[in-house]
Length: 563
Image (tube, rainbow, N blue to C red; front, side, top):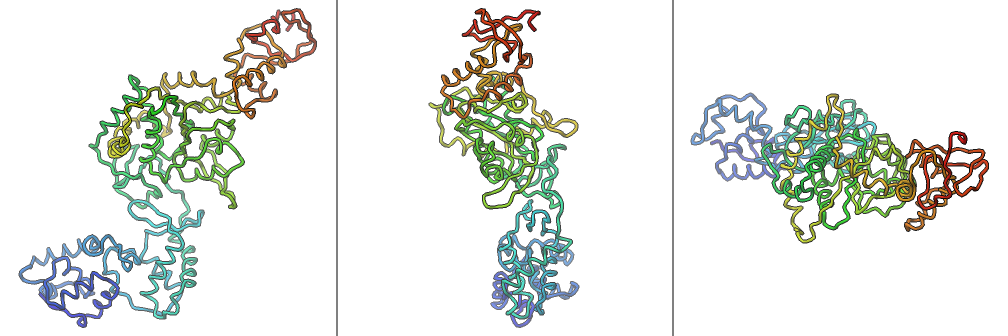
């Protein structure tokens, strides 16, 4: 084995001044201690720029550790870019990280030069290569690592620039924050770094910790910067993983109801896809305590990651008077819980659940526009009330009913147990892919009879007009009630229900709501008509096609000559 000293190779000593690992190896050399083969390979890379030959090989490798020269070359090539796992503790060393490298050999060729912005900029680009980009629209830098593009915040990037200048700039007076900032600005103009596309454009590529699952082709792929993922689900793919506990719990939550179980599985998979093509709002409703809805919501949050889930109040999202909507940007899911049941604005919720471009802003900040991919999920004991739950909105609502209660079976560790099954849960929900992905690559979740029945059951709670008509009115052809009479009856019923006054509709909105929900009703002025009590009414507005259950004499029964 050849013995080197620090003085025998200036390149080696220069690297050692910046690299703790190399310094330790030099200490072993000076103490005439034997190097391992991996340490020998590193030293060889640091001390030579020449072609490898047999003479150089034999001068470095101890005869007791001798291996064929061809094997040495193979190991040299194999280890040259993979020394970090052996020497550099996953590149946590500041010196190595400065150059976005995996081993100390990156330090060996540096000689200080005079400072210029262009020189530092070019060297920075050289060592970050394809792992750095500048998003022109967002005005942000991104750095690729471990399968995703992370935002490179300005202070961190300028810190890396300053660290680089310590190596390559001859004049220490030029290593300043101001100069680092100038280089930072110059980097924004480098053509090779500029990125003008969108992130995550392939909705079927699901980015996991150990690779990418191709949902469309049912393949597991290696990470690639070309997928342009800027988020990642926090678990690994294991094709043989199962989830027996989760299956058991769903069977308890939805006993003898495989339709609801499969519907939930479909939604869980849909929430992992960056798309709001299935334009629905999911309500998870259950009046009893400990019925499983909060557990499901927490588990879904763990699967997606908390970074991709927000919890904005549904009333605030439906209002124009606050800053909640901007929190949906870059999220996949919004879980709203236990609403206070103020009247919800219909049109805004339609926009949020339709994949539309949303305009929103944070307080004291300029307005931004973004496409909303955060699916709306609401959990509560009962359904909220909308100012106008028109048929278009009802089509967007689906309800999962949690009827059971597990007060006596509470397990405080259940969520932690289920989190361990997430790879298996992922495999189980993957089985629903063919059910929700159509041939044209669009997404649609079929609603079984049990889900449709839930909407029929709860729809009278969604809109005060529907609730009133359900209790107080009979739809009947050739019968009519004055609009004034039916509106007064609505107001009386409304107050009896104890609703907040803000939920009451004015006469105009009530009239519109009647015709939206009940297409066979006809509201018009009739020149002359007698009601059943014999009272005559001239030129009044009548609602034709119904009667009031508790005011039979206020109704007029029409004949063909009156209409």
